[in-house]
Length: 104
Image (cartoon, rainbow, N blue to C red; front, top):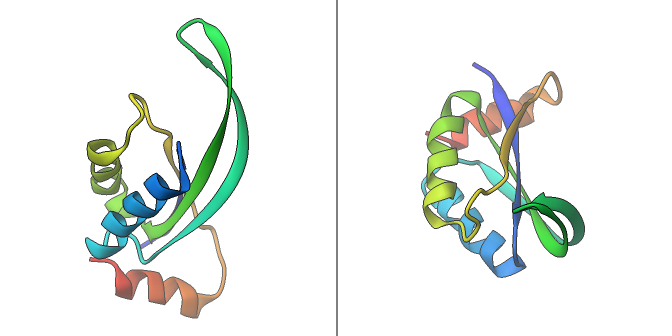
């Protein structure tokens, strides 16, 4: 069994909290971290956009990534939300066990 960090961006801290609550309450994530105040530059519809966003990082089991992604897409305000998984290679074994225990 393996674990992953899921990196996401949201338009506001409120949206990040709402999405994070869905993920934790459905046990698709053991924990989420919300980091407000990120500045972003990105291409959208043929032009460079600038904006403020909020980062949302979830800790989950890798096998839950597809279901977590669909849950985020169902409630996210963006047309194409950023939801990307990064495998956790190593770390505190007790913490990794906790992630597995607290997700379904």
